[in-house]
Image: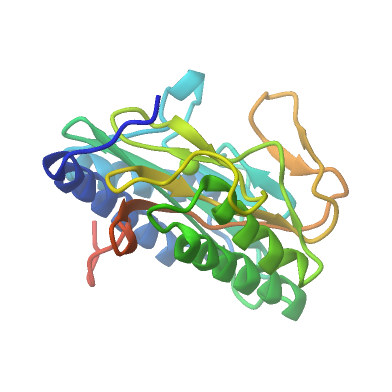
Length: 255
Ligand code: MG
């Protein structure tokens, strides 16, 4: 069932989303060579706690940490680890959710660590742009397939591929609600978008094959060919005049 939120619920979600976005922004400032992904996760956990919120991912289906941090060929669900030390040239996808006053906010961003290759930068740029193409397509009256088509056509025109095995989703009182929001699709197909729907649009875009494998830890999801992958995500609300991004950080964020 797709949940339509009231204006009051949307204002509560805005707050959860603000905390998520701030945690993500703060995490981004910590991405540099020599830092472990566990250190970044600890920063995220501390910030979310300070705001009186709860990290949405901590304990979700048994996930052991407060954020997912996925480096290079890791697509999503990387588990922060003290032995995963960032080095110059890495691309670092950080996915953070915060639960506050009964609602979740969910967002992700892929940060460059130090100087990265032109090819890696182009992948980040295209993935981030494809998210905004998806958001533009998330008009009331359109359908979920319009979002997927917008993302897919943008990245495939640049010879990248769209991960199929994981998709965006409704978000609200539950971290994952209906509808599913694939990053591929056919215009005019799927669930109709209605004002008050809140969804997480989150393109996961690979440099090579779209195929992915899940490692033995049952979380870490890697590209099947070992090539790079990027991930950007916003939580948005569908309104009469377009989708509005809820995961907007404050100008200044500090712990
Ligand atoms: Mg999500």
